[in-house]
Amino acid sequence: MERPGAKIGLFGIGLDTYWPQFAGLRDRLLGYQGYIAERLSGLGAEVVDLGLVDDPDKARAAGQRCSREGVEAIFLYISTYALSHTVLPIAQRAKVPIIVLNLQPVPAIDYAAFNALGDRGIMTGEWLAHCQACCVPEIANVFNSCGIDYHLVTGWLKEEYAWEQISSWVQAVSVRAVLRDARIGILGHYYAGMLDVYTDLTRLAEVFGSHFELLEMDLVKKLRDAVSGTQVDAKLAQFRAEFAVSPECEKAELERAAQTSCALDRLASEKRLGALAYYYEGLDGNAHENIVTSVIAGNTLLTAHHVPVAGECEVKNVVAMKIMDTFGAGGSFSEFYVIDYEDDVVLWGHDGPAHPAIAEGAVALVPLPVYHGKPGKGLSIQMSVRSGPVTLLSVVQGPGGSTFFLLAEGEAVPGPTLQIGNTNSRYRFPLSAREFTDKWSKAGPAHHCAIGVGKVAGRIEKLARLLGIECRRVC
Image 1 (cartoon, rainbow, N blue to C red):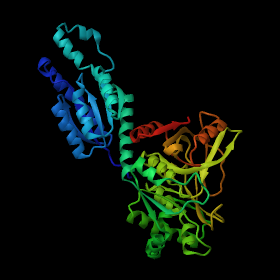
Image 2 (image 1 turned 135 degrees about the vertical axis):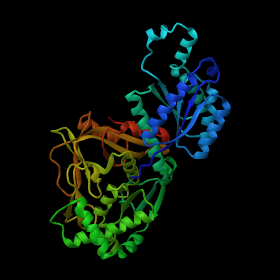
Image 3 (image 1 turned 180 degrees about the vertical axis):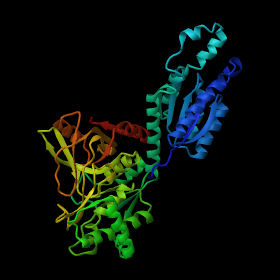
Image 4 (image 1 turned 90 degrees about the horizontal axis):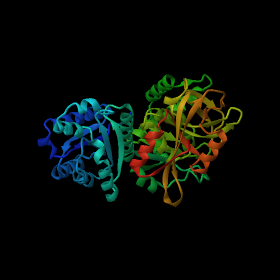
């Protein structure tokens, strides 16, 4: 899976004046920092440990090292009170987001044991090992004044809540790095007339850092013509392994889809694609129409193997799908289907590629006698998203040049769905189906969204903060 560990910098801050005054304090604080480094590595991060910074010269050196080693973000551990001049030079040189870890060693001081120490010098040293919160306002003041991007995690060293937040930040940093390096293919053209789907690629490149590769159908035809019978046989075996192939599927249709799937695999490999948006029609009997009416199975396999594919050339939505997939939540291409007012649920689904990793049971490969609103006929995917928590994400290009995330958390619930050769599921939200539909629609997204499993809205909100964009949450 394309989910590499984020490269992050870690440094602690302290005050060098304290070390000769309080024996053992520095070593104790370094021990806490070592614990943090170990936990961060356990989350899959590549940790660049910059040590304990306690004077401005060390801060400058640490900042230069962050810049030199290309860290994606910095985790700043407040080990005790420290002067803000040990922080600012790092932020100025590294120029990456900073997550401030305000983590004291324990949830509360043992006051009786502390006061029983008697010696005020020893007591002061003990207090300094617990006074992480002391300089949080100072650091925030300086960062605010200098326009430096930062985020706070406040808690105690082994607190589960704090580490859930830290883990979410690490994941968000990793997803941001994947998006920045992603090559997103655009094959064909938009579905004509879907004005909401039309996309400003320059704005997407500005926000996410992704590269958008414009692809020709002629290239897919060339790759498809070069597919061997042996490759087709291997792809048919993959179909049988990863899909529940309906006995209604004709042999010729399966072979047609398998040949196209091999070409799509080659396209993704040669162009190093991390995602793909596509749409095409072609003329009756044209070679390109033959290709585009046989892509669904292959595009679903690409999606299953972490190259998400969105139909109708919905580029914004394939970015949302890529985000979901990189967070490990899946991310299937969906749109409103119908509202069930009796059960108070909304049905979402779509024809075309789906994400098998989030399916309830087997993913069926079935024949469709007609692709509604599209040319031709061929094979299609039929599945439902498994019951349980879900997150919906839309990447929205709004008025005034804005780009923002639209989010909702709900639940996929069992019940009847439409067996029409599409992905189709029932969703219930904290709002009524009517209220959800109105609030989601009035936010102004395109009519597609990415649906993933689990509650990942908190992580997506952190990603939005790293990207510097707004995140609107419906529920």
